[in-house]
Length: 333
Image (cartoon, rainbow, N blue to C red):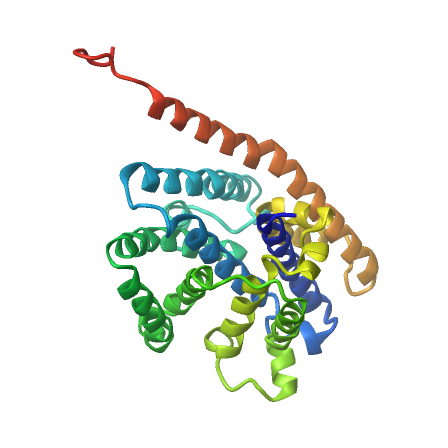
């Protein structure tokens, strides 16, 4: 199994953590593990993994027009179609029914969603990621000019972002997780099962309720060095450790990773709609089963019905336009 297969599985794990964390919070189940916003550890892992993949795939490439255009068209094809589909469907259903069937998107916040300024519910992470895409272009340019100076800048910027983050409404310490992922992409790989096991244990300890019970919650959850270290070590060791390949690189884990974006975007509306029909307090096992099954079915349908076709269409059309040749001495008709 190649390293990207393992990372697909890791992405699936992050999505599953978010879903399970939200379910446990609603049901009051395992508060000592997933309490105090434990689902957000999955988001931290998503951010770090995204930064890692950008660094691994692009920081060693030249910063040229074709390479930069390729990066942005792939990001647009990957993120925009499903996000816009969910936002617009939420807006239409909200206006038609008067209630948030998917998410609470109405005339007052539609523009903010469509411009990636901010978003409601679990959609809030998508604008953060898109905003980092813009910043990554500048980081990539700096690496192409002076790699050593850029690495020093990266190391310095991460704690600085955390320190000054409150001045800018908290968004900067979200960005720092992407930066940590970029830093991990520059490190040598390890195939140690022991290191991977330590990373899993550290990641578990980074859950806010767990770190509180262990007495190591010295810092704010999103600003904790423990959380930065946990997600960084997990990403770094998951790439090629044999144990990671047998677990994260397995076919079910990789499939969850493949549809993880739709899982993330749709699990919350599935939960919300099922609460209208089933009392989760009286039937927690049935409710949990239906949420998991409904989310997987919805994510599969939207992945193959929206995500994958839209990505293929966008990439194909752009590549065709790029490959068009203007006849010598003439102009396009």
